[in-house]
Image 1 (spheres, rainbow, N blue to C red):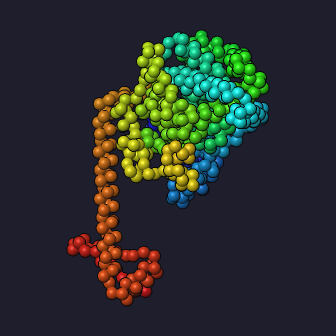
Image 2: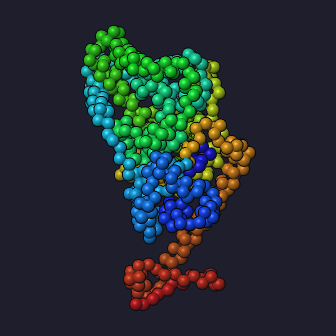
Image 3: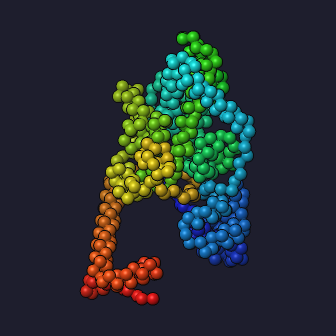
Amino acid sequence: MGADSHTKTITCSKTAELIDATMTPQNKGQSSSSATTTTSSTGILPSLTELREELVSNDSTLDAQQFQKQFLSNCNGIAHETEVDKKMRQIGSHTPILPSEIGTDFNFQRGIVWKNVIGFAALHVCGVIGLHLAFWQYCDWRTTLYSIWLMYMSGQGVTMGAHRLWAHKAFKAKLWLRVVLLWLHTLAGQNCLYVWVRDHRQHHKYSDTDADPHNANRGFFFSHIGWLLSRKHPKVIEYGKKIDMSDLEADPWIMFQKRHYKLLYTIFALFGPTSIPVLFWGESPLYALFVAFFFRTILSLNGTWSVNSAAHMFGTRPYDKTIWPVENMFVSFVAMGEGWHNYHHAFPWDYRASEYGTPLNLTGVLIDFLAKHGHIWDRKTATSNMVKTRLLRTGDKSHHTYGTDEGRKAFKTLWNIWRHPTNPTYTSIYTPKPKIIQSEGYALVEDELKKSEMDDDILKREADELLRRQKEEESQKTEANKIYTKLSQYIKEQQQELPEDLAQQVNNNQAANGKAKLNIDGNQNVIQRKVSVQ
């Protein structure tokens, strides 16, 4: 359903299976009949010759012989899961990725675009100067409030307009509202709306793979701003051409903004906002430039970027623990409701971008307000059974209603202080593994889901069964804990009843052996302490 469709985790065992089936040099000498048998047994593999040629020709980073030699020599004898993950990252994308699949090549080296580095560095320096002018009372207080108001309004152009309306088609809006949102998006200065939507749809379609413009597998800095400071991965370019943009291409307003974006940005994002403080309350033009433009722009950009970085790393995953996006309360606050990101990636077509819509979700509140007055309609949401089934099937059990006590406690914070979701470092103790997904990617809209994933009756039955199993597991754990507690208490009582000299001898033996040994007589239901004298 949604983001968990057509995925698999990179594992050593799967790698070996695919190598044996498709890439070993011995396969070259096999008869055509055995090759056909191997292909049919896997169910997803073409003929051996076609596969090898296709892997090399289709912009694949896979070198079969090099991978076989390097990966198997490293993975041989590795048993522990974390060690396998470490080896996977060291070796990179030398995994048997078929032409119909895409993953992450950790060895890929990106070229730095130095003009972007210098430009963004200068922009941040000017933004810090603007911050100093705004909050150390160098400029008029009205300029500071005005800049914050501009940041909120331009943010709605991104969150409500570019993101929920156009990228995910989560609702429909009247023409006047679409034009206003397009203007506000121009004011935000985050590239033209066409490019923004294409990149975001691609991010969801191929989330956290090489085809994702800001792949979170490459770390916090890259997913925050590094992707804008380096050249695109070839897969980003290749798969970006496959994104359906026909709906935006049919909109004359959006295409007008795309053709004249630089001029519109100069007018509406630079000169317009900085001239108002100068004309209406006599602000210094220089102060207006640094506060109403540079300071506002840097805050707005980093708020949006935090959704790509922090909301993919610091938080819990109650709806899908296999993907990077998380529920991050801090990001929801700074990005007006965009931080409930695990839910959003599980159900990207939901206009609320969160399960309940309103907690720290100013954009959702505004959408509901406009819908109440008839300016917005056809708001799409995930059904309660769809949500319940998904979180019981793939969640990390941290959900406040359908989770478990153990799952809700499975988190950590920096230095183990301020243990509350408002802490920006509040995060799950579990980290997803790199994934290989099918080239068609994840579902972006409901129409791309299977019928079984939208049938409410089927979902309800599955949810009830999953909930029953979860309660049964919890009951078994509770019973096991009770037995363990009783055993521990009984052992302590028996040890206290032993003569002093014998108790001392038992303690010495325990210290020598490292642990106590128990002998349980199942027939008589008696637990005896074994005392072995060295």
